[in-house]
Image (cartoon, rainbow over all chains, first blue to last red):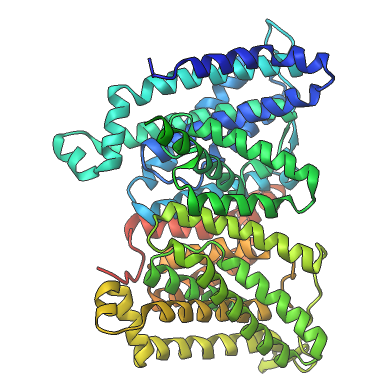
Length: 307
Length: 297
């Protein structure tokens, strides 16, 4: 158990009682916002696994996120209504994609790795946009699927996302503290040393890459359910930058980095959008200040105090 | 084919600045595309004010270079010693900021920038073959600038300092090379190159917010293919990308329609053409992970 284990539990409790309180006080809008935050928290945490713990700066993470969303939307368009089919198919697809891309990209290092992951994400983007029957640049509307057990309304989607996020975070927590996670961090710290000790560096990195891809795909599926729409923007390179921003903002390689970053960035964006149409200016300024003056992110600020 | 060369040379102007900053200062500058955008906007503005295309371009190039040097001096200088991740993020933030500032100053409507009058018509370059005079001018300007850059880097004292700074910054500094002003100057040169590209591509493409981002990715593809830090690599890479991209767009749909149904061809053709350059990059990196002309061994 980590030292400050009550905080996540309290947070979970608050999130559980949030929707009824919000609807009782006429703030249903915020249930949607929190759902969106949780979805991005999931995606950012998956990126944090490879970026923070694995030291692999992937600039193409939106590819898996978007492919998950498009898989859900296209299956729905083709008449598949059961979520029990859509979810596994979308996750397997994004996992496969991550496997293929990772297998090639992980041969390169450093700046070249950043650029080649970006290149592959761009290829996926242009490929998807070219399918006119699936909306092309307009994106694709996607009905919410059928779960059999319950109706997928805004509220149940909220709880579903919360459940998925909780489960994934727990699994990730176990993962980064397992032998696998330790080896991954050892590779980040010193690749040749890890290789000398006898760990198959390439296989470990590829495995982490695929896990991150699957989780990002899952986040993409939830995103498609949330907006009932798959947009090419989900695949664009700005989206990859957005996810990276969240991880950096929250704290690279800090366990709660992805969650904190997603929550902070989306809330700040929401506030700024209310204030001014030039909200990106504010986001840019804040981001610049964070990078210049708090390189460890928000989680890093807390961590320093706790130490 | 000529369109490919013309596009390739303009890409080279962007990529050359990027590769110098990247290779010599070891700094990833995503905001490079924003300087290109600023260059195009300034050109449109100055041409509007003065009414003379060449004067407008000149003013815009000087203005963009000054803005670039100001950026380097105030913000980017802090980032040289940081890891690439911080640089990517900080310059990504700069993109957002610059985009919004441009939108505040010039509005979100695309600006109209037309080619100078004397060059707007076609001219006959070979008997029976007409080609746009403006595009031909672009090729000429691109070649002249490329030559100038080669001379600057390989045959002058400043170029020697630059190469010394690139291979070992501390040592060069110890030997009396003024590294800091040099890097600021270099950044200004990179910005000026961006502005030239922006000024000449502006009349062909549209002058609008976000124009920098799409071309920035292309410029990165170019320098990765060419080998980071190598001006020669940037030239070869840019021409390669320019020709492959233009040729792909022109011929792939035709080629596909030979083997597949017209509907499939018209859908898949443009997509494949867009993918082609990324495929090129992936293949190059797969076989030569350091690019075609590695600057450092």
